Length: 350
Image 1: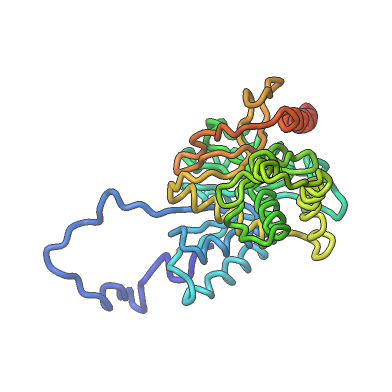
Image 2 (image 1 turned 90 degrees about the vertical axis):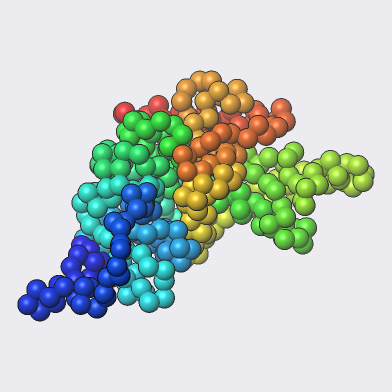
């Protein structure tokens, strides 16, 4: 399946319409050898995959967008629907196929394929249903785009990022999970809403598992550069730990609430992943709380595990992990989060 008009410009009788329409100027040279088209592949054209795809398109991040899904009719329909918006979008070549060869030469491969999370179902319960699927997805992606960065969005994202790392054979810096990037956005929104400030002025992270054992880093929250807890202490303003815990609880429940109300989450994760794609493709070296190989950090030494930590990312993937301070209690919760994910990984047959 290819973009309409992208494979040939020949008219009736073999006339090359491009040459008939445009006249060449004198003293031309061949195209620059440094010319490079940015290509992103999205695996899975469900609600999440298409929210990511359309957000990436509207933000003018790519020259070529490739879509892959097992359902050929749905896939072609989504491709055509996006192509029909060509007059309203930056010029992008949109490809789609059930065969992974369409992803060849990708700079970034975003994996969203997986079983949908059912109401009341924890992310970790999805593991077994998604493991076998990844065995058919990751090896061909690695084959056709050996230099790509893999960005895993499918849940349980931490476990499946580990799976993608193992199955791809890629170095750990080129395998990233979307992790708690969205959880941290929800966290910043709730704190901003509670304090009646702009969420962009709130610096706050959720780390650990993208799920029920996530850890809110209360000790490092700042508003406009002012550390909030130490500020409250200096001003002798009492704060209730229950209030803080309720905000964190609301973060964890946010996705479940959306799923219960509309059946799935899509728009927020679409913006979140497009945000990560921008940082990677434009080499912006921004810090995002994403799922990275966390072994050796904050006392996690019992095995290879992917967990979210504030990491600097760019064109080569993960550049480093921010040396953020964790209190003794936060460090303990982070290690418990690692234990939760490691216990699930032990059940994997890799």
